Length: 372
Image 1: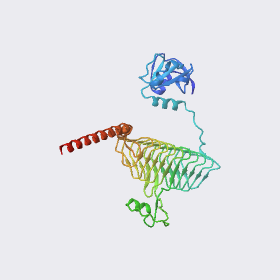
Image 2: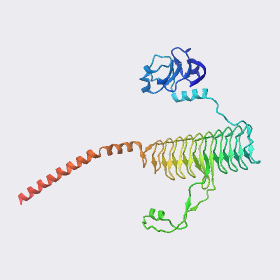
Image 3: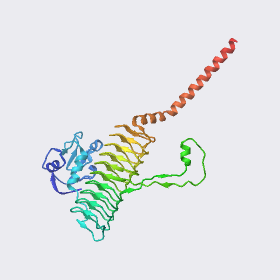
Image 4: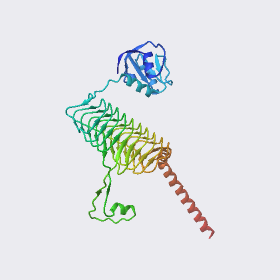
């Protein structure tokens, strides 16, 4: 990654919040993508102890390291490596193209829409009646926004997003390309008791007759609070009644499904391809890892972690780590795996014990007969 200009270690340390050890006036012109691919003009980031063991192969002029990495090379020492990366990339990032302020001629914007100062509406955007869009918000090309939608200030609505009617979005919200807000929730009912309902009651009778699924109207809304980010092709369903809510500062990855009436707390992290069933509550700072599946009406407590590909069918206490399908507390899951690995040995032991017991029983039976 090329820097905008040559920078000294002292200048870089000031930007990323580190301290220089060695010559502070050494200058570099770029940051290596990988320490092992660095050139003599590069700055290399070495945070992994395994990489630190291979520093002889690194040709970089200087390093950014954590206190655990020991080296005599000129270096910048940082306590929080990913925070240093965030600061560095924020400082050198090239501004991405955005539509200029104003309404593009190809956009279709209802005359009743209220646009704040500096709003940018890109090509082929459609905005329905009664919407309000806050100052300096950018609507990228091809986005469709329904009626009576409120969007706050300094938001970025990516290309091809779909926002249905009567949805409220706070300030500084980012929607990546193709995100969808406000689809109807997946809710149906039958006039007569269904085969599924009978089976759940323990009745195994199957009736082979038509019993159509009747759509339950979803007349609720979605509320997205300030500083939320929603990843590409993620979908969030409107509520049956009331609101599906996403709390302040929550970050949602790509391809996530959040069903109707969910209540997501503040600063929650939800990783890609996760599916969250209806009416779930996920409390503040919980982390839902990739491809997790969460059943309806589940509560996940504050600071809990659901690990990747977990299948959650019961509530998760605050600060607990759960893994597996069905998901259980992490330590319990590991203990179960250890027991499974020992099954072959355990079975052999049980077989041996059975044979010994059989021999003892036969021997005791012989002695009883002798007494007779």
